[in-house]
Image (cartoon, rainbow over all chains, first blue to last red):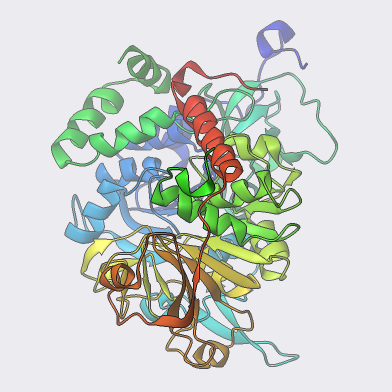
Amino acid sequence: MTPPLKEAGAQPGKKHMSLSQAVATLVQDGMSVAMEGFTHLIPFAAGHEIIRQQKRQLTLIRMTPDLIYDQLIGMGCASKLIFSWGGNPGVGSLHRFRDAVENAWPAKLELNEHSHAAMAAAYQAGASNLPFAMLRGYLGCDLPKVNPQIRTVNCPFTNEQLAAVPALRPDVTIIHALKADLRGNVYLGGIIGVQREAALAARNVIVTVEEVVEKLDLDINACVLPHWVISAVCHVPGGATPSYAHGYYERDNAFCKQWDEIARERDSFTEWMERMVMQSPDFAAYRQKVSAA
Amino acid sequence: MSTVSDINYSTDEMMTVAASRLLADGAVCFVGIGLPSAAANLARLTHAPEVVLIYESGTIGAKPEVLPLSIGDSELASTADFIVSIPEIFRYWLQAGRIDVGFLGAAQIDCYGNINTTVIGDYDHPKTRLPGAGGAPEIATSAKEVFLILRQSPRSFVPKLDFITSAGYLTGGKSREHAGITTRGPTQVITDYGIMKPDPVTRELIMTALYPGKTMEQARAATGWDLKGAVHMEQLNPPTEMELKVLRDLHERTALAHQGNRQQVARS
């Protein structure tokens, strides 16, 4: 076991800062922001901080805009959504997402809709400094008819036609990880999703972490993002709840079901967000309210 | 002495059992959440111990003790042979043609096995916005064949979809091949009445097998198109005692594990 920070007696490096400072400095109105985490390690604390700081006109990017984007969309932070599956996993609809698409509440939401395979490839292209991604995809699918960003390209060698989508290059990518060391190197474990690609495709990267340790003591092939590609590391224990962090805590399935009720009506949603998120100074205070409820 | 026909079982159990029997031992199966996951794990726990279950969260060779509620539950990560990233699962494993069976659920299908999970009504002014594509468009075209499992109703089995999210046989005949798709498509559609298969020429879905006690009339009434039945209709066997026991134990373990998970149920 790696000794925890307080026993180590060392000071975190300059990449370490508070989440509110990171969001205030790195996320501006009108930016494109990707927040990734495939069911696992979803950066809820960072989502709440963006809502609390009332960021506006964001282009939100995420393969699976689940509860976290339902909250951001319902609170009026987004004007555009780039995504590939928008539901509450294992529960049903995202009511705030649907209200925005079906009734433009609280604001019109422009959609740029893909499949998972295409989104993943688009992040890879961004991380690889390529202008577009290609894939064997979208065959017989109507999405290219409604998304002009899905096009085709012919192989210069065989002339085979393939689907093409533009690279994703977010202004900021935000992820939640298991551990960081004092310099700000970050370790992801378990289901790692598309976080590495999303981070390496972005201009700036914010990482919230469960734990800060003096030194990461890992297998040489472990999934690590080095401190020099990261803009800010924020120590936010529990920062992925109600999703889970492998080896730290389980997914709060009860809350995900409860969210269906909270978000179903505009009034109940707004009241809940005001009380639980807006009136909490930070994520730790929010978590205390949730566990007291 | 109780005989097989004396056992009580639900339609959901019959569906799950019928679907699980279709999965061959050793098959590499890309599994969706819900009924596909229940059927695939029942197969793994009964006749197909060597089946390889892949969930799109990147978990390869998952052997969950309890059924996952989401596609990326820790149960899948903890029991997988190994875990890969999302780009890798879609590119090296699915797109590369390593998947034998794509096992999917759906909100709505048409008579050619096309799937809509995007929108009811016009795309720009939808009556109902559905979750969207997820992994399904490429699973439907890159897996060697596809099994679909969903309950029948005139609203879920419609003559024509408002939106094709994932390709079945498109407009029938050879249109799937003409669209550049080289895989077999939805070879089995498991419903709550029985099993449908595509007609070899027209590719329209035909009822080819019925569960005990279910009739073609009932199946037709639950279908939005003029559903045809096979000339030689197969009568499927009810679940065996063993199949039911394994399935019920699985559901019971699942209910127990997901109960009170706020108390952080510790499992090794």
